[in-house]
Image (cartoon, rainbow over all chains, first blue to last red; front, side, top):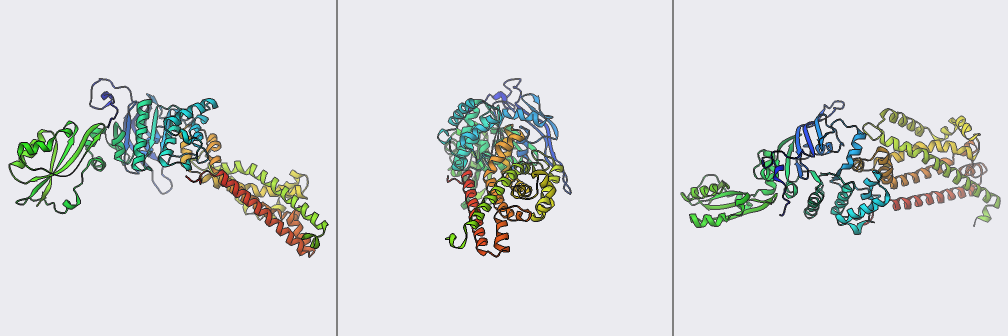
Amino acid sequence: MNAPVKPDAFRVGAGLLPVSPPPIIRFEQIGKAYPGRGAQGAVTALTGIDLDVPKGVIVGVIGRSGAGKSTLIRLVNGLERATEGRLLIDGEDVTGLTEAGWRSRRRATGMIFQHFNLLSSRTVFDNVALPLEIAGTPKAEIGEKVTRLLDLVGLTDKRGRYPAELSGGQKQRVGIARALATDPKVLLCDEATSALDPETTKAILDLLKQVNRDLGITILLITHEMPVIKEICDRVAVIEDGRIVEEGDVFSVLTRPKHPTTARFVEAVTGVEVPAYLAGRIHEQARPGDDTVLRITFTGENATAPVISRLSSTIGVDVNILAGRIDAIAGKPFGSLLVSVPTREPELAAILGALNSLELKAEVIGHVS
Amino acid sequence: MFPEIISPQILALIVQATLDTLQMVAIAASLGTLFGLPLGVFLATSKRGELFAAPVTNAVLGTLVNATRSTPFIILVVAIIPFTRLIAGTSIGTQAAIVPLTVASTPFIARLIEGAIREVDQGLVEAARAMGATPVQIVRKVLVPEALPAIALGLTLAVVSLIGFSAMVGAVGGGGLGDLGIRYGYQRFMPEVMAAVVAVLIVLVQAVQSIGDRLARRLNKRLRHA
């Protein structure tokens, strides 16, 4: 509910400041093709990717499996290399870096994974210490730092345990502590909550939000779950068949999806299904005595307006609420209601007129007798 | 119970043969691990696109390993006599027998270690790469420690096999339990010696296996009750 307020200047179209700060990650016409082997031809994973990840912002990339999102996120720490285009990190062109060049850069980028990827042979403490050992940090400093990180993720009492003794949520907390060990500027989240139950997902997302807010770490995450985007992202890019088909701030993309793929993802979090008992009885042509079923979509300010009672009092019709969901996206209310009203003119026209004047989207779903 | 059937002289022979077997197996297993570990790690990490990608060297070493492993041990012992003489100064005796035992166990252990390392979740390698680990760091801090339980079981298997192999080195004058069993138990018709030899071998193998199992279990942190 209390999503951090991000400077609107970072948002496309806000236009409060003429110049936005340079993005921390910039994809410019990035393409990635895997060379063909034997009888198989080359496989194109990404095509013409243009994407900016502004500093301090949480950006989500959503797509179905195989859409290219894993490849995309792995370009940022050089686990995959682009075959076309330019990749800029903190203003620096990293497109042509060698493996050794990437190695030193990777310390500035943390990464967490769907299956956590913790070493089963190391305790919680030693797992978090691993990136520091790799970086050659002195032992005393490692001890101090790991203790602080375990405190941050709330696992101080588990420091001597092995991953096999932890729950999924605890494992991901270890993953987050490990990813933060080298003080990265960017945190990459590869389906970080996809293996977790909804409640644990919520807790992990809250932790990521906290990391973003308190440590100022930019987060780029990939997911196939719209609730994750809705919960913590400021901006979202929708990827399909290796292309970004839609991109923008979360509220506009979720409330006014343009691409059919986006619309399908959005439906999962904001859509209201026609209840089963009603679905079979809805018909297109109105018959005398029917009720009309309307879907009213609320966005922004009007989501809090007392629309239904206003309709009843000003037009004098009975509005029957069939189903509904009002939610918050990026801290703004959003949702939809399914209602039925008597199919009677001129009241019906008046209702639609009143809804439109409130800038609510109202559509007729059908009629029930 | 033995003194009535087995004379003190024979008993001394059995004790000596057991010590010889233990010595041959221990040294050959140690040397085999010393050479087999790096070889196994290399085999597991040098195919195309892997950490130490060297597909040609990988293929050559792989073939060499297969060739050694497909040669029956008794033939290998005879075939490498010149090499044995070069290393041990002689081709006869318990010490000399360590050479063919090592030559046979190295590729065997290498394959076992390769298998154990290939079983390590690639996600861990990716995570380590994402931390900026060098290939050597990935081997030392991720692959080998994570493969350790499987390596322990593999080495147990290797030692048990070596105990079996060591019985054949009697053919080139190596001592040990196998040699004793053949010469006294079989050629001199002393079934009680053969029975004693087999009994000692069974005890040895059982001991090795249970030590190995226990070690692997202790190293394995994956199966702890959550």
